[in-house]
Amino acid sequence: MIKFESVSKNYGQVKALCGIDLSIRAGQTTVLIGPSGCGKSTLLRLIIGLIRPDTGSIAIDGILVSSEILLKLRRRMGYVIQEGGLFPHLSAQKNVTLMAQYLKLEKEQIRNRLKNLVELTRFPQDRLACYPGELSGGQRQRVSLMRALMLDPDVLLFDEPLAALDPMIRSELQADLKRIFKTLKKTVILVTHDLGEAGYFGDRIVLLKEGRIVQAGTLKDLVRSPADAFVTRFINAQRSPLEKILESGASGNSMGAV
Image 1: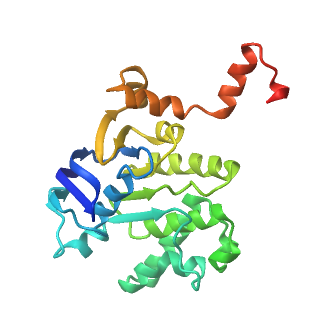
Image 2 (image 1 turned 180 degrees about the horizontal axis):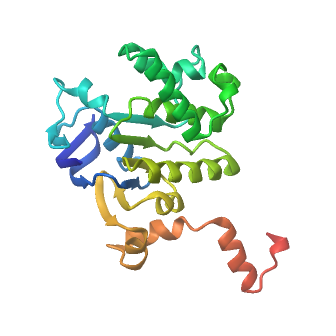
């Protein structure tokens, strides 16, 4: 579905990506993960054309991404960012339907699509008239997801969409997103820094470091057959604090002293 060939991107003296070769399969969820500054969000912005590569090429469904066809390609993608990125002066409903109205779709078509998306994302119908500032963080992300899905895109791009949410809301949205991915069978590329989240969503995980791909595969591949010492260090660093506390307690330390 999406293919990177020898893609590099620099920001001044900073090398964000260094000769990336990557193929993303249609109908699967690919998770990009790695430390801050490793290039994962840059890959996402290249796909949607917010930035252009310095070298190499990107093809979507066999079509090379270029300025001439960028707007057409963007309409085949939905993009969800951290905290939603909603327009604060528009209601939830107007945020969702903005592009559909701009493209002059039939009112009945827009109304039916909105109804289906409200049901799919479990967004409260009576909150559609509210502005983003009147919604909870989880509700804002559901609005952002509906907006991304409004034109029924082939590709969904998520840039750490759950990072700013509290744990309970995040857990609920994770479950809903996984259900939606399974229902829609879209090509999904999701950026996260959380290995547990990557394993929960990802058919394939791509681990990056300093603008290069270190290893790609399932979570089991990374855990059982790490490509190098960095993969092992990254996995060990992602072990939850609770797991470490429980291990400490099992070895004879008092949990009450923690």
